[in-house]
Length: 333
Image 1 (tube, rainbow, N blue to C red):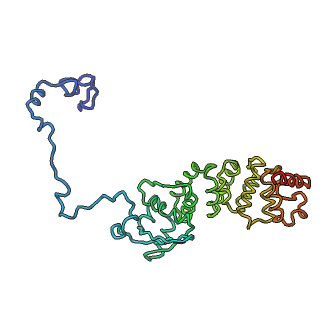
Image 2: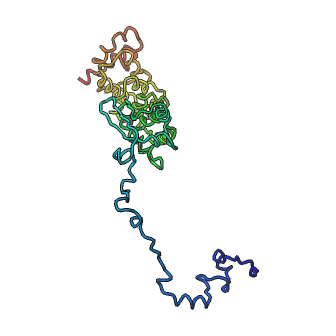
Image 3: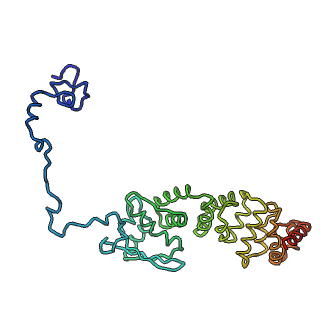
């Protein structure tokens, strides 16, 4: 029958206060008879370790595999060693070609499967395929493969390939990669990285990412990387200047615009000049840029003086402003 107080039969599961000396043995209480018997046992008997042998004892010499490369994704290993069953050749639009020895089972099944490869492997029994990608997407392709092969879904994303990885996720139909890279971009998109994301998003027609990056560039225009802004295509730069989110001192804006015009002199048109020199946002011109704006950009403006009476030259809305520019130019001289 159960002892008084309902002490469990398996008393090792009970608390110390529930145990009775006559029922169980533990650090708190010990039966004298047990103590006398255990005291006569040797340490070897108490701490007996059974030797069951090693794996090498049970196999033929040479059959023990080398697992030193187990941490390396299979596609990075020799094709023969990894038992690769498919090849992907990627050609970059900027030049260069790379071949990857992959595995159908990994690219087309599991949590990180790609719809593109499911269709390809199902409909085409061939042993290889060829892809042509933009430079950043070609550079991101190994990172994409590492993600597909990772047991934890680890993604080694960086700013310069962030937009490319989003494009790859959409192109290959990899929803897991899409969620992962979007989470990365949300944290990584700052005023420091915005110009890079803006240019890359435009390259891959990622409209929402492009809009978010453009807004960030406009909000932080004075702090944004000047060299990165100059590299933007004319349409992207004008979108920033025309953005309602643009916040920038007029004279600083005139310096930024003048630097951009110098870098893209061959692409300047009257329409572009009107777009990047809005009178409301640039009512004043930095004195050091007045000479350039007055003498160099005025000929580029073509028929602006006659066609747009309110915009005689970039940054100036009236004839008196034009005269002021001339005075500022003379002061610079």
